[in-house]
Image (cartoon, rainbow, N blue to C red; front, side, top):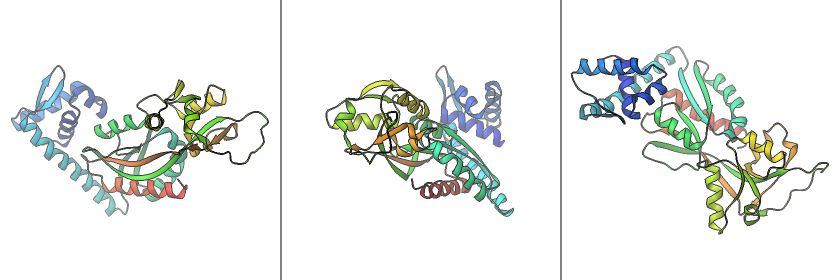
Length: 300
């Protein structure tokens, strides 16, 4: 049984589509289909039911999917163990970060990763929590930092940090440093024009839920999916924003903004998430520890 054929079959069965699997594996769809068919011929079993809506595993396919996941994981573990004989963990770790944390974590995380896992390869992507959760499911990511995530049968999560959202507004020209301002009531924030990410962004959903709890709805001026773009628009006078202190501090011109706490506080939880369908390798578990360590060192 060819390992590449097994990997191709597992990915098609998990994603329910040859097209999606070809994109995830970065291979041509005809080549993918041919390899899966060769596997079926070798095993003398139809593993997938192909239809216009995609592909679903047969009973034999479901059995092979269960074994195939374990086989591929054991192969990856074997590669890591061989790497340890050379004195270091190896392998690739794909990490997803939300834009608000990517600017803060990427550089120190990369430095720590290179220092502690010099023979491993690191890939970092930015994305919204909903998107990254899908990337975990299809195997594009090994680890993701998700906001306000809830455990599911497919995702295992562990707490990483908690952030408070602040009201971010442009600093008036010539305004000198001022004492810490008092908190602004959430009801007053709801009356302000907000520059905010579009649904299903986790921060957007959290803000709407908290405002609904006090009988308010946000006044949306602009929907923008990108922290840098949101801050640029706030500085230009398009509206106010609700972002973490670190998102503002890591911007190009933090002095262009003034921040105010909100009452009651708007707190978001960021969690480390991995797929429960693909047990983490030793290298990935080491990366989880590095991410927690870097977050603590930065005071997050």
